[in-house]
Length: 575
Image (tube, rainbow, N blue to C red):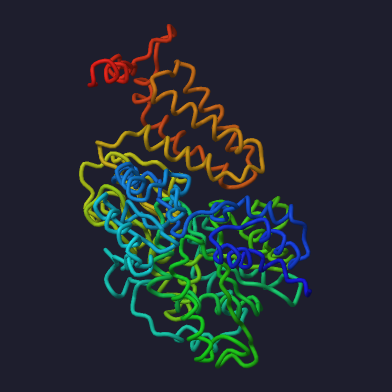
């Protein structure tokens, strides 16, 4: 048997799982033999990713999003409806093996919650009544694909036409045709001069990254698109993949040409499996037009092609070195930062990793020119930015804004009323009070990778913090102790406060644990996980003071009525 390259292990595991709905012992042994690795090694990989299962998950596998926006928009009622209609308790399958029902972290549909995936097809704006119709349809023999919702992107706002960069009309091949006017070095210089920074949240200068890769030693180099958009509340890369897959492809071609790479890989999160056919069709269309494959039309002998690698469910794979490990068919655990991916990345070769929006912006810079892009935004934040806005507002959806917009103006645009809290850049970002309306969204002030979650005055801050902390606890890869042990401790402290069991010193203890997690964790997940809690304590100290109890262990939230409810039902038939 010819040994397969380990870089295709995830693909093979998906094939084996899709054939029967789970990975049996025989599948593990088969994969181990095909790739020349031990069964224990294969077990280690399958056990790392949420969507690989070693037990049957039903003919129809349901994943219900449990993000905070889902919690606040009917999660409990929808969950109960799924359990009632399928007969499957969450976390397992029904007695007939027809339905498997599981919770999962944000699935990139925050603008239409509650949402779920059934066999990785999207179902949005769920209600108990809609759940009943869906399950009855499946029982009647309809497929998830037939019943699934079409995700039509809602572009709620973009600047006037001459200031719109990403969401303007798209003409396939235009950036590539312009590319032939420039040498690779000139392309790198253009990206640097335009001031493009990474649009995933770290905002590292894109041109500098490309320059490092171009100058790195070696003839084999790679371009990797990080489409593992896992930050709760974020869906702007989903929208670009859905609306403008060709723009992404052209951005990757631009990067490949600039640094001298011949192969590109799109790492697509499993939650976006439903976008895979569209993406593959776009790639094939570009090959047929001569823009991908053996040589790129108009660029002489330059060769470049792109493939898609499907992930398997792991928030940590949004971290670039964890993503590289996953691409290599391993557990998606972050690497030690002793070398940059631009020197030693995928398979030890120089690699450029940018997210979907960054590549799309790079293509527009080549198409529209440096001055067009550079002329927008602020001194340190050039161009425009895509925002995913969801939560308590009238107009959730996709927004392209010019850097420098005030927070208050953004809230007005999306119809946010009675607002109390705004979470920028997801749970790992910055918690903002509505009193900060005059602050500016830019690299100089509020940095936003893409997620804007809006909460009104009726939303409980501690419920928000609990959900965020649960997310980080669940999504920690467990590789380093500060994150593995610290996040459960922070969750425990938040829940003590919610239960009325927190003593005066507990807030300080929470801050101490927060510092331990932030300063000692190996990667960005741990280093940013406590951000929202720290900011909440700083900005809303009165809310925490209310949660503290006296040292006599008096429990303010104890309810005699609730405590005796079960007894009253048993003895008197009523609560």
